[in-house]
Image (cartoon, rainbow, N blue to C red; front, side, top):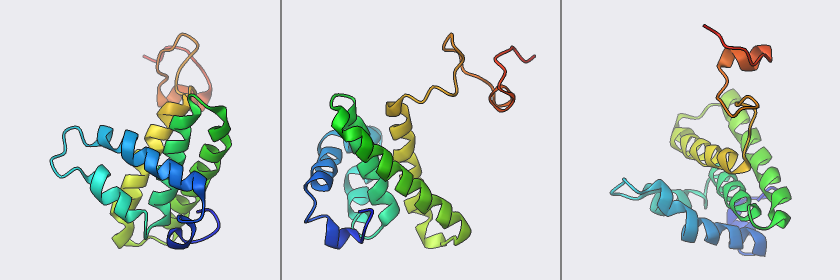
Length: 144
């Protein structure tokens, strides 16, 4: 997906197909536990066919989930995560209100990617969450 539109790429790249299927079969349902309409199982996959930012988010999330047990997916997850972030940032510069739902879906998926990735920059060495001020200042001291 990094090199073209999904309608032309998806049928030809086995890794993307595999990760797309992995999202549908193993990850989407977790988002829809309390959603009657099941948007992450029904709407999100459809949006990937026309929206690059959602596609990149799904592939990044799926690849990172697979990377938990197979490190070969790590590079793929990072590449698609970066592509998705770039799409979101360019969306800030050229905001299109019709893309607002897509940006939100992608952001949710990227948050799950980050959780799986185990980003620890928000925690001190003991595992306690750091405040925003502590993260900015680089200090782990208690702020009262």
